[in-house]
Image 1 (cartoon, rainbow, N blue to C red):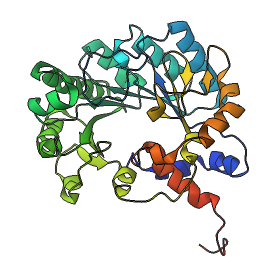
Image 2: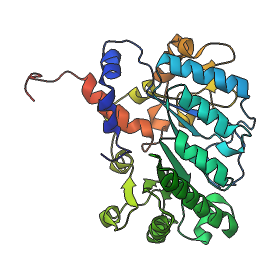
Image 3: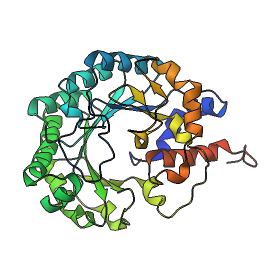
Image 4: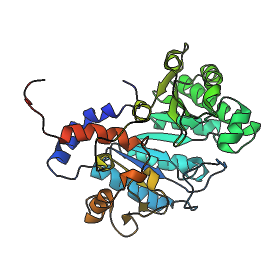
Length: 327
């Protein structure tokens, strides 16, 4: 299965069934921002609203609470650049030893060989956001020069080398936002991804200006598989079949300052809880959380968000069907 398919929710039918009964389900996946700081200057960045780092003590406490509540996976992302946090790898290890699956999204330019060795043992996957096939495109997407472009690709190679040398199961991916500006660099990026030893190149449309995807791109030869965020491409030009963001009950965000917005696109905006004031379980089950989801104005939400695909599936599950016993 495409690792970016919302159909993966079918592996969590117990939580879907609880949600159908009106019971608040534990989220499957949480995003955790270690910091709001970033060393890149992406012109269209949607993060970085809160500039501080999470304290190590708070992070350990909140991760333990998430694990105890039943969170299955933690994605360390931003916010800012996770590896700017001085204890990033130690906190990633804390999440893994608490029993949760761990993923990391990084721009890669701060990665060291020692960190790569540890990360491929701790993470189920690591994805390096590059979003360009040439240095000129990289300057437009990340606001950085060619030296950082090369450093990002070196990070991919370091991770792949560590994965192979240590026999780790971690998958090493590359994130690629497709727009009219970057569409012409996909073939070059795929060639470099193969040379670096990456497992996949993830294509997803840039919010607001995503270019259509040529089907042939999903069948390029080589070790590196080309995958896309299917639901996001299907959503281009499509109307919603739901009126409430159901997906927000299965994914969530904790920002570095402890605030919890409804989703990743709510970073920097209103939040329904502050983990300095209330425990994770109480926050997730709170009336404030329910009201925050109910108040989401879908007309102002991007159609290509991760929760869109989940909400479509869940709307189908929520509706009564004729002849349910016949499939």
